[in-house]
Amino acid sequence: MNLHIYTSEDQLIEGCKKNEPTAQKMLFDQYAAQMLGICRRYINNTHDAECIMIEGFTKTFEAISKFRNEGSFEGWLKRIMINCCLGYLRKNKSLSLQVEISEAGALYDETIGDALEKEDLLKMIDRLPTGYRTVFNLFAIEGYSHMEIAEELNITVSTSKSQLNRARNLLQRFIQETVVNKRITTVKQ
Amino acid sequence: MKHPIDHIFNQHLQQYEVHPSVDAWERLNESLRKKKEQKIKLWYSIAASLLVVGISSFIILSKQPSGTQSFTNDAAISEIEKTVLPEKPSPEESVPVIIEKSKTNTSKDDALAIIKAVKPKQENQANQKVQKEQLSEIPQKLENLQASISSDLHISNDVKMIAAVGVIPSENAKSNTIFDKITNTALEIKNSNGVMAEIRQFKDEVISLEFFKTKKSI
Image (cartoon, rainbow over all chains, first blue to last red; front, side, top):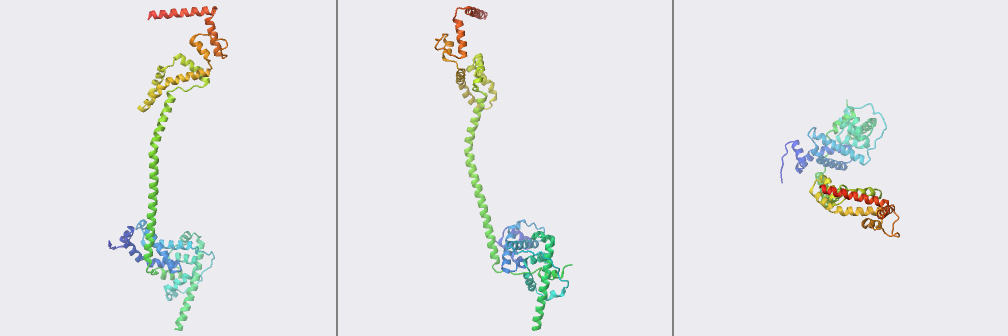
């Protein structure tokens, strides 16, 4: 058995390009949790999200010879994962986008976020309809523009904007509900 | 400026991590192995189809040379026949041809002359061999040609006999063709004792005298 020591990410990527299982395992261990976190934001159950993450890694290792070290590997890997998630949502026809436009509420308490845990926020995202969740993830967390979202999801820019506003409104309501529930629980204790 | 809701979620979930299950790597490995097998199968199928194409093309190509050879020979023969052998004339063309043949007294020598004229066109040795074979057939073909021409002209056997022996056939045996009538009239004139016969006799004598004179001078 050949033992390889990979001292940098570039060496790890080179090892993966040579289909070395050790390099593949190390790369998987390095990024799996983060990538599953991304998949989990788009798909609201962990089992399916993990399947999509495995599919994403399989595609990554197959196409890794095309990676030219021009950008960050992490960004490239994220992009593959997001595309896999969107493909899964399209395939399952759960990416139904509502065109209804509604304005978000005007008042936000910026300190409210401090009272929330990551898991609480993830649960709120999970409660969103798939279309809202996808657009919100792409815009608010990945940093896509409405134009990019429109191209990616094959929708219009105005649809993307309306989906985002709707998502924000719902999330604001969920946050308020969660904060109130937490306060009640604290008072009871 | 980022929307407050976006900011909260971005801040908390940007680096959100979920640890995969214990068997996640095994599943990934299995998935990679399956993909590898699929690739190998694809390459095998490509190699197999290439092999089939290669074998079939080899079989086709190995059969083709003999076919090509015979085709080449056929082409060469037809080319030679076009250039060397006289074409069989149609009934309409038969009269000028026979006149030309009689004038030039077409024989094997004439055929050789035709071949010599054509010969420069032949470039390789193989073609020359074929030409020689064709050449030996030419006299026979010419005879056949003349026979066919005479048959096309409807020259009766009686006329041929008159031309060959100089004997007038009986009245019953006379043919009705124009050529026969002309020939018969000519023979009647030759054998008769009239003025025409005297003229003809005189002409023959003059020709024979000229012949002897030229012979003496030579």
